[in-house]
Amino acid sequence: MRGAAVKSGSRTKIFGSRLFAIASVVAVAATFLGHTAIAAGEERLLAYGARIVGDDARTRIVIDFDRPPTFSIHYIANPERVVVDLPATAFGFPAKDLEARGLFKDIRYGTMDEDSARIVLTATRPVRIGMAKVQVDEGGKGQRLVLEAEMTDKATFDELVKAHSWNEPASAQTTSAIPSPEKPGSGDFVVAVDAGHGGIDTGAIGVDTKTQEKDVTLAFAKTLADRLNREPGIKAFLTRSDDSFLSLSQRVEIARQNHAALFVSLHADTLRQKDIRGATVYTISDKASDKLAADLADRENLSDQIAGKTTTTEPPEVADILLDLTRRETQAFSISMAESVLSSFKDQVGTINNPHRHAGFRVLQAPDVPSILLELGFLSNKDDEKLLLDDGWRTKMGELLTEAVKHYHASMVANGG
Ligand SMILES: [Zn+2]
Image 1 (cartoon, protein in one colour):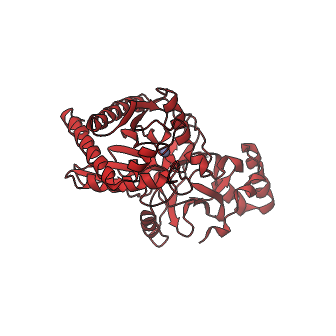
Image 2 (image 1 turned 135 degrees about the horizontal axis):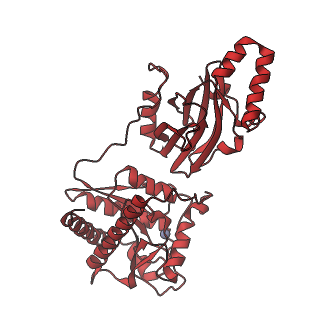
Image 3 (image 1 turned 90 degrees about the vertical axis):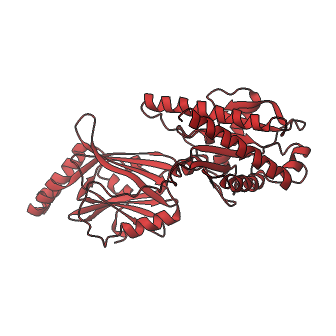
């Protein structure tokens, strides 16, 4: 039952996109092929529209049907694929409307046999369908199948392959049982520690020792996570634990999937002004606090392009007042975390002038996870570079940041947050 029998999207293109074109093809086929074809033609669902949006962390597929489809979802490994089995369906939308993007590098669909059709989504990495449902169109004219794919880890994907094989009694179903990611232990305060850059994206390079930022951030992220994990009630995890590339939205998604209550992205960039040194804490904002913050955010946001990812801006979701409120609340929490960090750095760690700044960092965009970006120091400054490579300094920084996290957490609890 491989996808080999499935016709590629471009094949269906010859049938044209418009409803009447499909209707006439069916009618012509019926005339030539006689009775059975008429019956099949009448029963076939018509998929008359399709859309795909999203990025390499989350991708949504919507297919419009003339009647509610039954469907079932299966997973196949090597390469990672998601298979959507449908009743007999005529695919009548232009192939370009369902061109692979985001988490998927190839999408094929077509007839399997008289009674069934199939969509095969080949993924760029392990994925899971977090949500799959059929809903009535706003206008009440059609029914749409909505599939929300999200990145996951290899182990979860392997579980899905096992749980959703064709060996299970696979009666047609309208929803599929999808396991949720595991929740952390009750009451733990979960912190995502994000080592900036990685893999093909080296980040900044040190002036003196040619140290790469991606190594500095990873070494410190490990120190910090270890230190945080020694605190009862705090559970820290790394978004990356080796020299691998993660896109900015993947970092955000990993934090959300692991139910992080706080996201700390670590960096050590370079500046043209080599005399500037010290730590800086950034929070997100539409408008940058100053030129230095704006330039830095621009450079950080380039990370995806360095790795050859095309970043596309999606049209904003339908204005959602609840999401807006969440965002505003999250921003207030992020600012309070930034202040907590700076008060624990006071007289202990050198900071630049106005050490709390803000700008449009894409890695800080989770609407529901308070997030800060910490520039530990600057690799463009010889003295900072020395510190960044010093074990003792790292330990001390880990200590102070742990104090800051504890202080922030305590104030959240006190305020009922
Ligand atoms: Zn950086």
